[in-house]
Length: 398
Image (cartoon, rainbow, N blue to C red; front, side, top):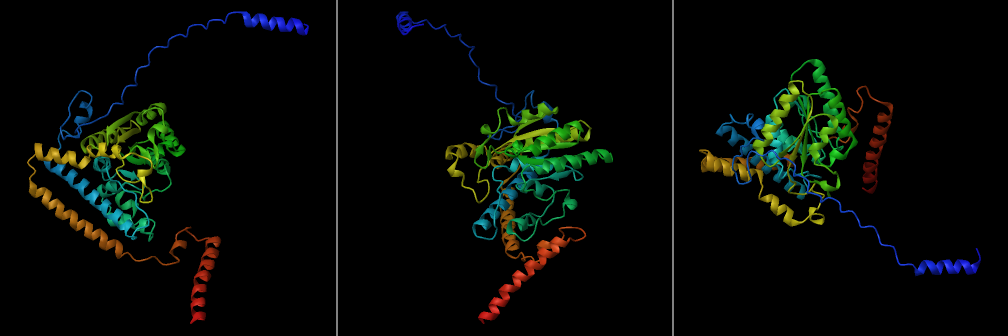
């Protein structure tokens, strides 16, 4: 083709009328996804809920007495007071760090009171309410955060494992323990606690798979407080968290994590399944972290105050108090006595923490290996020499 013919072809193309675009096919109107089902037995206004969807869980709390309800209320109040004291002690320099459970009392007390003495619990580092239910002295929880021990209780005394800092790893420990329980022929069950952020860890998903394949008697209890430090749940997953269980072949349930009655009922139901050989269950307690992730965090940097205010209206302690006042014979004397007990607990926590002895400088090298190790011996000797150098320097200055 010559240059002239090429130019004429281009001119002819320009002269042609532009082609009409094919009309875009209208896609069907997308409907909003259905809201996840939420098991709720006690509304934020303190009203008891009964309907067809909650009937299966109602059976697990229908026989609950007024005294038992008051006991649940007491558990939550004292756990919150202990948590507040620990936060204050950290701000005063008495603790190095603290992970608050503020707002999550119902999820922890409800699920914790659902366990039997022979069940075994694997916590993260925020299950102060569950520890309370398992009979662990709350002051023993503070040694690790003060830096004087690695956990102040014997896990086998209360069937409550030491706090786990590595995110999500305790779910594998719990699943392995549950597999052992099944092989032993015991009818006890295991509960593994973790948060919504941990649910994105590979360890948790591996635990799901092992638990399902081996039909382990384990309940995976996720406290979805909606913030993995500064990352909201909608940036972590495309489906509601409890639905993840479906992909592994066991049921998942979302429960109102601020409803202590619902948490108690659903966890009892899940534990019964485990004991009956029906395998794992994922319980998602939908709640809210009212405070910071830990005392080193500032939630005002990444979430709006309006969000917290909205959740304050769903306070787990307030809703049960409303129910006790309106539907039971609980009088003001009960609340007054509880206030006094709360003050006593607060003072004891402060006194015990401040009296905790510092560990020996060489304690860190103990119990690393059952039979000792040459490398640990070498490191110990280096540390002893390092400490001695300060004494030599002080003597020289004198």
